[in-house]
Length: 177
Image (tube, helix red, strand yellow):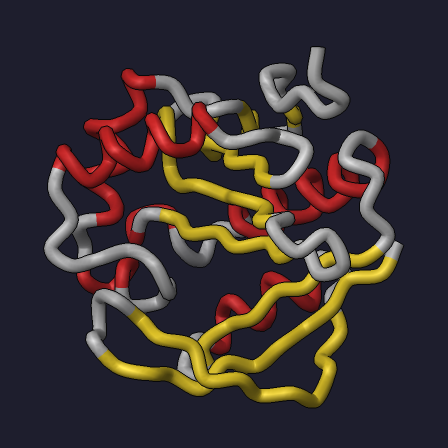
């Protein structure tokens, strides 16, 4: 048995964060295929096809949850509305990232999901610090991170956006338990 299990869901008032399953791929593909969504992430390509989503779900399921945890963000009424993931490949600097489909922007879902995920990271994943970054032109994501307790480090890194095909200034933040 593994020390960290992401199968149990993290529940909030409106959302459930749970491990990804094969049936999530069509909704993930539909939402992530929007250029405006993909362009605000480092790793999502554009165009984004069902085969990309199927590959990602398989990848997420195969990861060692002690080092990397990925969650479907499921709305109790609308189904899967996005994805949130922790990359702990570097155990000294685990990083969180997330995205929501455009129809779900501006409703507080990202803040709700991230706050719950950070409580999980502290209590169940045993992390005292988690890093994140947002593209400098994505102020809304910066607001979500601040609401979840992240602080700006003052560092700006250049991160590549696969969808944009270019490097983008990224404002770095840290969360301390």
